[in-house]
Image (cartoon, rainbow, N blue to C red; front, side, top):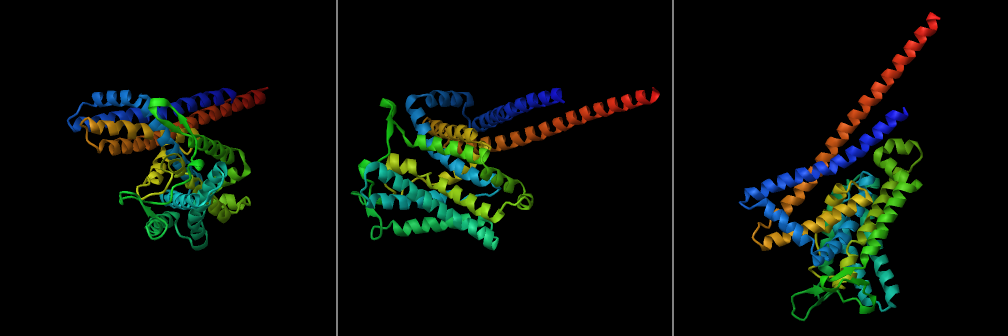
Length: 378
């Protein structure tokens, strides 16, 4: 059996490597065909993407984008591990960033303390907004998909109402941009100066800590085990004494708290205020990133970097004459290829493992039967 286990482990390692390789190759082939269909040379496009993406300023841009995308991916992944589809991250991070900006602009605390208050406000607001969907699911049986979609719309409406100049918003000097009051400069989050390449947002450190916490809580604690158990089978988890309804609400609250952090890199490191041009759609990008990363903290980090890289390089392709829709095509193709490749490899690996275990058990049964015959003959 030890030989069998070693053989299976080697196969699992090879299959784990085969899935992303297969996905990348398939995505490159399909993308090349799409670019070729537009009348352009795909090899020139790929070469431009490689050269432009390796520039120092592009690397800083990619890391800054990946910081935000990583937090969005983790927020979605928390729900996925619980078998919950939290597609309300977009509304959760925007309403959290709005109220955090309002509170931060109204307070004048010492810098570090004010930063902590702003982050806590964002997490609490995000957790409360997401918790509504959890309560509706456990008390009224409302699907979290429906409730989070509606909550996204409600969050947009609430922000639009409160951001008016006669409410909590204010016009800029040109009279075109409406925003909250700016955060005091003393409470801006730190950055890493990369010279001509720009500034790397310091919130990347917080994102890394969130990833470590996600890995530890879900993989090394009883709470994480219960959460994953409920995601696998609610009936089995309930039979073992786990409070399913409590876990559903708790996981939605945690997912919302992490979602509240999604807007913080932009707020604390870049805009320093919430305006009507605050980034949109990051929550939906987080869904794709969580799928690409297989809900694994390292996988989500790689997917976030890939997404930032594609945005940077395909944006440059548009400037040199390629169709602007190429980015959406590439992103969609990659997601589809990764999902399909992992599923194909998973099924193949499961079938191979069953065949090997069956062959080993058959060999053991044959050996046992032979021994019994020899014993009888004696």
